[in-house]
Length: 124
Ligand SMILES: [Zn+2]
Image (cartoon, rainbow, N blue to C red; front, side):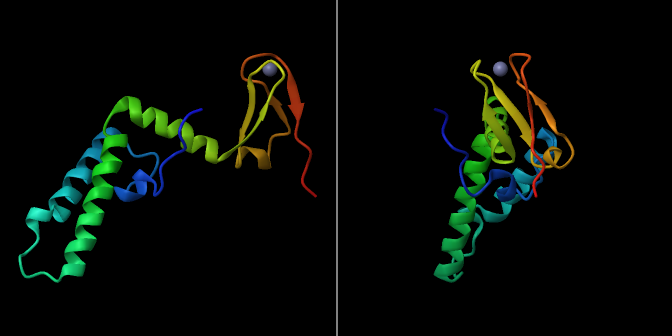
């Protein structure tokens, strides 16, 4: 079993959308890290503000650990996709998969590994 996607979502932590490219993610990460780095905070800042900053910094750092590497990003994207899809196991061991958007329009879904097809029943 693969681990579930971490919450909160790392794209949100970097202030980017799920379609953001590697270059954009890197740019956003660098900017945020500069803003929230604990060393950057003034010594007389209230404890609450410092705490919030540290929390944010850790969130950004963890987001970058996922999205900053092609492999972990791909893995996360797959898990995220699962959250937005209906999927049904096929008897061949494969899966019927349809995104929630597609489910509004499509009625026939084919298995991703064999040639079987299932029909979506319209919601009433
Ligand atoms: Zn199948």
